[in-house]
Image 1 (spheres, rainbow, N blue to C red):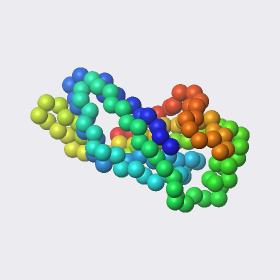
Image 2: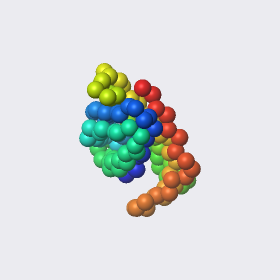
Image 3: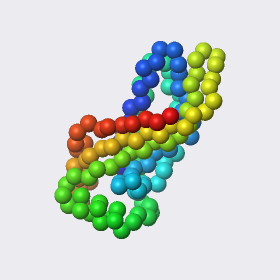
Image 4: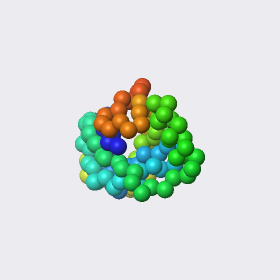
Length: 133
């Protein structure tokens, strides 16, 4: 799976440094892709950064309930997933850098998916994301 993720820093005085950022996809609160380590990211003041990580799920063990649920939802044609970003961040204002803070981002998405289909799938609705620092 590949998702395009936008990070926006609306602040005019503070830059953000993201350290040790990882991304994965979950279904019913269970990871269905292994965590992917993303490169460190420096975000300037008043800027937007775009990332498009490719998240693959080969070899990820899942429970029977998750496996059965994915099969049912795929047969129905609509699958609710969560894209998760975990990491550490620091703020920089002038010459001052803060300590590291944990960041947890979860974006709930719904995709239209049919069994055997390969290629881009439609995103149904607007993703709802929550950021905890």
